[in-house]
Figure 1 (cartoon, rainbow, N blue to C red):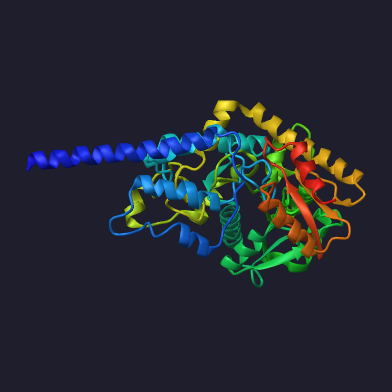
Figure 2: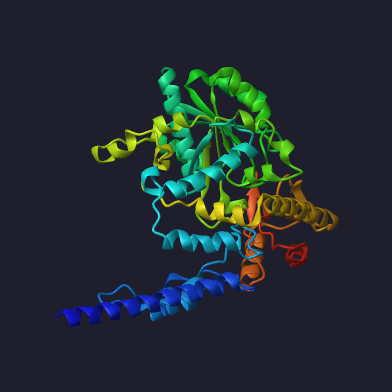
Length: 455
């Protein structure tokens, strides 16, 4: 009996080693490849035909499962770190960050509490402290890495409402003030929280300013528990007048949250720091490293000016959690709407430690320079027109005379030809095209080749 058990253990060990080798070989090839395909989605019917059921009583084995993934499933997903993936906000993780994400999973790390993951939490907090310093926030600021900007915004606004509740009762339904061009996650958070959104029209340049916020607060009074300023709108990359808004919120004692999921990384730029003036007055901020800070999905840094206000709103209490909640240890689960979490900030920590902050600044500057350069190319072409001058690294432009159907057909051809992934957008009912530039490997040649297809 003992011999049979030993034989099975050895067989299992060999099987696990084979699985490990398959996974590591694929990961190494993916991370070291120079020319990755852009790829594209396929129909559900095609996937059912090409990838028969793999989840069965006996399974299909690691080798066959990896083959299905490599040759069927992965090619049906668009490669978000491709240099000509220019839709939405791309992802462009550094090689160090992507590789270390494997280490995080392999190490079986739990990032919810200091008790269980002190080393990981310490490293994540080093990144959060560095970001807080870059943003001008005071000593003692801190927070947590959460899944993405939607959860970061929700968690910050929950903390803001809890803080307002502790100071009094609103005369009416709670409300949050933001730009009419704020990210959709603000409206989503408001639905979850069952509060109102007061959407304030920005200026013609897309910037929400202090005077407009003041008027909204005068109209809606103490039922406003937070104002959200956008630091780099998703559609245009526009930064609100944070300094002017902060002057108003500070005078009223209203929580100021800065949604910088995409654009706040621009604060690291050596040439754009001035557009973020006033950021140091924020009560909470978010920025997504998986966007313009070269980390893999998924990671959003949520930072509170006073972390205790976040802790009071989010700490979960239960008998089995007494060991954690009866201490003053820094447990990341206390600062957002979550409990179980992986230490998703570690890839960012490893990448920063590997390359240094200077390399990050240079990469962000390069994206801003590239946006300005392609903006000049667009302006010089009579068939094209800029919708707005780029402020960060998003470039929005029109092809004169094109309808939405023209943009849709053009976008589909680009993807079919595997030249680029550029989805149409719109502004004030007019269709347009949009480049979101975050990948250091994107070149002006890439962008002009795409523009050439619009002639």
